[in-house]
Length: 146
Image 1: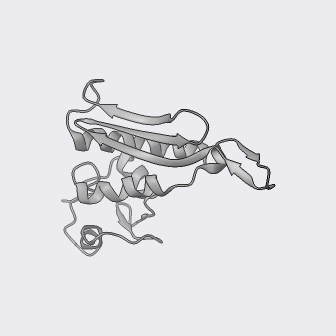
Image 2: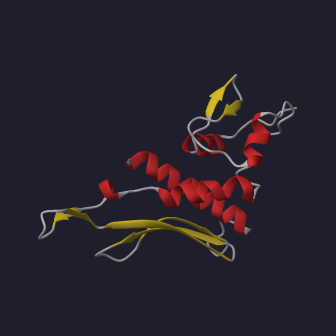
């Protein structure tokens, strides 16, 4: 029996470019998928999305988050060469012990924490759970702010 996708998994699948079809399966849409994703797409006995349980599924999410350009969400200025500069530099997903923090690294201001999850706050018991929750929280923030 196929596992029903929860809303959180659907949020991540949408962020990763999967497109829902036939009620409960997803297909690739403009995204190079790791081999495990490809295997899932061609497997008739697929047991569900694995973002929450597999580093092979979750790390491409981390990499996509770190590749985003959020320059338009932060202030900018004209420099002396009449070139527009942005305060945003990049996003870092910091994973350590049973904690994960998604941080916007800024040029002129201190880093800005965009999401987090940790065992010390009681919302994650394992490293993969903390990473999953921090990524999910970031994606929800990103969807509201893009």
